[in-house]
Image (tube, rainbow, N blue to C red; front, side, top):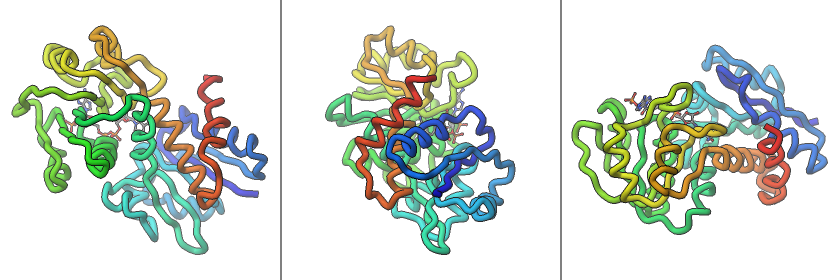
Length: 264
Ligand code: NDP
């Protein structure tokens, strides 16, 4: 029997076990996906090994520990510095990042996008900005503070803080900040965000299962909107397929995993 887990802190809210167990059952694979609360990120690989896992997902706040502790990294995870998927390959643990391709798949329904404004400069922003740049989409970062802009500048991605930003037209605005997650705040000054939205067509919030103030404002401004549910779904689909050496069909996995969202 194959055994998988998600590691995080907190982890009780995660619907990954539901998603992956539905896919295991639906595809008639003998396996189980559990959740593991992990306080100390440095213990990630020890815990992975002691549980004798075949694969795992990693969520907040351990993605950077996962990146540092893996034996091998895929090229994209290496670039971004964050790992959300661990695979056992013999004695080695390999690390991947499926958040970014999950996001990219989630925005497919918007059609061809030429330029994107990303609000926030944390781990999720780095992953999303990097994949968009790889796909030759023009990316601009706007963050509250200057602190985290270095990564973007080093990678030739335009990056501003609230103090030095100038308004331009962006087809898609993405909220990657945690504003609105457990409060009612917007990720940016309301007037400025309204001006940007009036020039824009699409809005995406990586937060899922919640109509955030960002999404409410986007709806008021007639943008086509999406929350982070599809991104979560597709990162899970891609991780699941990696657990099985990419031998499965993503459409089949998606069909089963989707059930986790219908039930919540
Ligand atoms: P980080 O902690 O790495 O980054 C948070 C960013 O948000 C920083 O740039 C910070 O700015 C900014 N920020 C925080 N609060 C505010 C605020 N009130 N106003 C403006 N900016 C703010 O977070 P992550 O990138 O790891 O995660 C971000 C979000 O993405 C979380 O809500 C997480 O749940 C979600 N997520 C969703 C996924 C999905 O599959 N749908 C996958 C991964 C993450 P500063 O630098 O100034 O502090």
